[in-house]
Length: 531
Image (tube, rainbow, N blue to C red):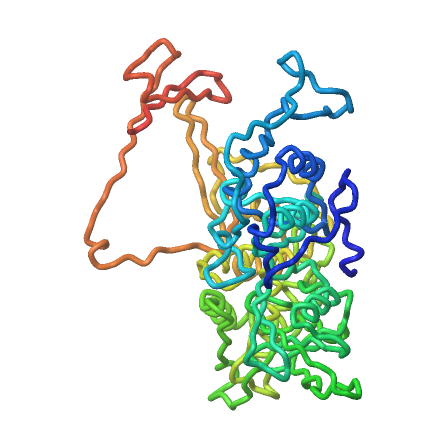
């Protein structure tokens, strides 16, 4: 889908003439314009400011402090200056007649400056600290064109509307997108930083690059230039950059055709596991070093940024023999459950399996493997793992075990199950088995066969003495590592409980109590809350 196919937010204004343009990334200097009419500017922007975020639409960011200054100058939020209401009738004014001119609440704002929204030294990368309304506002491209015409400035920051999540139809603006580094094949020293949308297509990226690099009269090809080498040809125009596995700080090589229209960079021989039918849009992990390891499995994982937390987790699971054999031998393929709404379409399991196969290939032992495909799938289904920020290894382990379980869940249609009642009178061995069987009616996978355990929890009502004992499943337990000094310390937590028959018995101050009601006797219990 090209730019011409992208829906723009609805507009009630007439077509706008293209703005005059100044330096790169900026509009004309505001000194070239005469002071405008606040009433006229207010009227035109009002017509463009009634919009909802749409999937595929494009939106401009504008500095919030500048936006507030402009609103003060035009009395934008002052309804007494509205000529028409939503029904097209004359608005009712508190005065005998509507005001004939705007009395500004502030001076005319200067040239637009969006630089505070960006990372220092970048023309496209937004700061991770900015917040909507506090630091920026969204406006339509038509409104941005008018502001540039009237005031000049920049830089021009455009973002795209996308769906909030896989299971939601709500549209949001993809604020940070993906930052890439683009270079020409005939001048790799000239690297340009660009911010693109994961929902954008290869065709759109190609058009943007040709425009930014002023390439005319020649055709180009785009390469995924992973680790400064041609990794995959991006030759499916309709493929999104997300599907093409373009990740944060990805290098993109622009190959320009020669005078005869020919290209000379050859596609690399694939050394991956998985389906490569989609040509350049490879989603697999890759062997980056074939030096002979001391023994099979002594394999390193490339650091894709601050991904040591991910690599350490993968190495731990890789050296769990039953799990490794299950994935490297391909047995997992028979258990993939693509229809599980709680799963990840089987893609997380496939990517992890491909990685295990590369690391433990007895015929072609690998020295170093790049887990790029796994990193992509992990970030696709858990956006907090996108990019190259540091994360907690145990958090990743918990997500990965749960995700692999759902992708490999043998239960296709999960039945409804009743909660098990247990008053603690029966032996724990008997009741834990009953809880486990009930749980396995909806959850049964090789992952749970290996890692599943049960927590025993006992609750006693302080009012009626009713006992409830449950055996809850878990796949991982986090254990803190204490220092020698901490081991020598002893601490005790003491909680004081106060029973009352009704709310009239105050005991201590009511401010230090909370009232709970017993589900069986309906008796109120006043509990002293420690300060």
